[in-house]
Length: 398
Ligand code: SOE
Image (cartoon, rainbow, N blue to C red):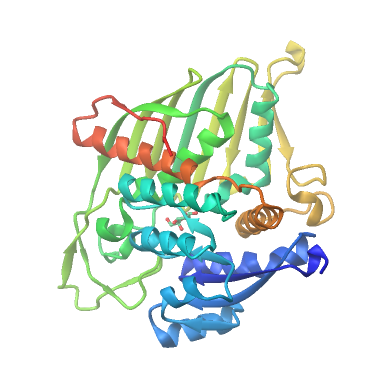
């Protein structure tokens, strides 16, 4: 059997927004990249029999089930992809790893540090048997972000002094927007902090290669009661028409914090779902002794670079179009200058995951890396609860 004949039979749990994004990537990855294994979209799982059957048909899965235990225990599955809300990540991931399945789990890894520790420990145990695991922080795989990391690693920014990161959305500004699962602590773990703040925590630690060592934070829940949802529970959910049945919002609507990184940098972070007009605005700026680099997800094919080593009269921000064959991930896509979008980050994620699993190396970010993010989320919450008091973030020991 040639390596190209090797199959990775994927079973995915969840079929909403992230399930659709992952499905698109699983469908595409072998068509774009030459990989040592071929993905087979074997089985999709969801709680509602009718809806999961529709999802299988629409998203391109061979089979469907309502029983995730059947999926993780099946001899016909090699990889379990977890796209459910955070309250089921821990149980599914640990069962899948125990059954010898490679696991890709959506971010944030878990709802609590305790769960994330259990998952990281299970991943470390399974690794001894060649079982791989990874957490889905997809923005690492935007080519401009990967390039940003390379510039930092190559020393082009010198000593990093500042990290400035925001991730802003506005989909719950309307107080009548319903109480979807993302607004419930028992389902989601936290609010804007864990959903979108987790991305900028991971992204900045990844790009700088530095760990957040301590934080001082504020969080706020601006709208504390919302109508119970009718029907869909996604980002475009509708409120119950009668407008009477209300429920408590149990997560933060916004979080902001200052932080220190272990390489000496000072950092600021802001995550909000109340930034009117900002739909999915992730922006990271890094200032170093030799230069500055800026990434803006709304212009994800670009990177702004200020190179302070250039002659004084030639200095200024350069807009680099990250669409050329020599840029990360880009050689497999379109001719020079032909841009890519949000969904490509997931295809790149699957590319790296499949390659790692098929060649027997550990993919990144590992569950231990994701535990490190979870420790920061937890420190932010505790700091905010104690009047913004300085709160240390311990290194994840797995
Ligand atoms: C919703 O806030 C959401 O879909 C997040 O859950 C994703 O992780 C982010 O990529 C876009 O926004």
